[in-house]
Image 1 (cartoon, rainbow, N blue to C red):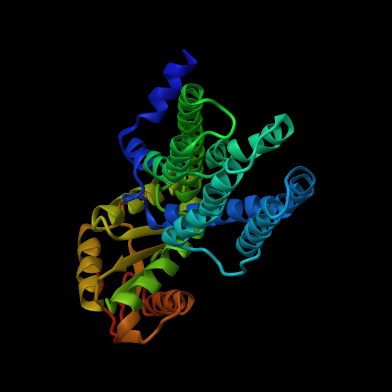
Image 2: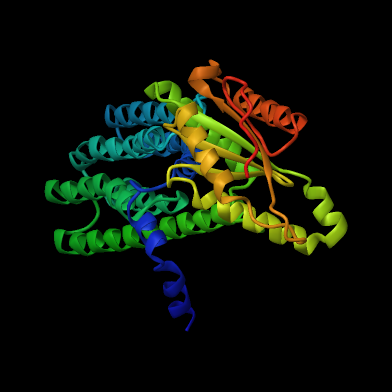
Length: 383
């Protein structure tokens, strides 16, 4: 029963796609996931960077020179690489960078295993050496299981596990250190199962992250993005507009005389007016636009690839449709301020919002139910 409920929850169309492949993830999800992957990489790399040299004592005690020296050099090199990843101060804000760092993290033990295997295989084996060598032979199991630490899609889990599986298979053809070849194939099957379980655990982490992000991303009352998510989204859009040399418009919408609705008719009626206004605004936006509840009765519209003139057309369309009715039957109006990144020569998201907010206040001071745009011209009041 619990499994059925889990699958029902998991197989939502949009979520299932996001859990299998990363190419349709939203910029905010990708950024959050990149930050978490980087955090986990630093933690894992620090642990391995500190623990890897400790085995040198056992290598020196069990293996003869020059093998013990070669293993020592390998361990010190691997430890230095792990610590370099752990102490890398550069931020990781895009998923491609996170993939590169995770690939580097997994490449270190994969190369260590690939190089150490033929060195150990060439050494004569007794019971003690076989026992110590098992620690090398089972390294792929440790690293494949470690994938469960990261929030990954199914495709990513398969791709990141593949090099370690290939290294383990290649070692079996070269000559198993610990097991005869038939038993080695069973061990390889076990490694595949561990990779599948680790990937499922990684997918579960990603599913939980998506659920939390969806819950935190939207304002419960209006369904618009929350201010915190809106700020993060605006930062991304400003950077993208600068990079692609495309226009970006921000529109500040403040419902006129909204306080009197709450004072005269109560907060339930005020909530109804807010929901209706948000629904009306959202219906006028494109899929690429974003509606953010900035606070109280204030909304911010983020309109990428939209010039000031294009944004003004959308604003006038909203005003023509209207923002709903007040409890007394009169139309709910709004004062609107518009700013555009290129036309206003602003390349900081806070300055862009502040200017739209300032122009909205200019519209309020001019009599409300007006728009102040890039050229600081007031639109005539809506009928």
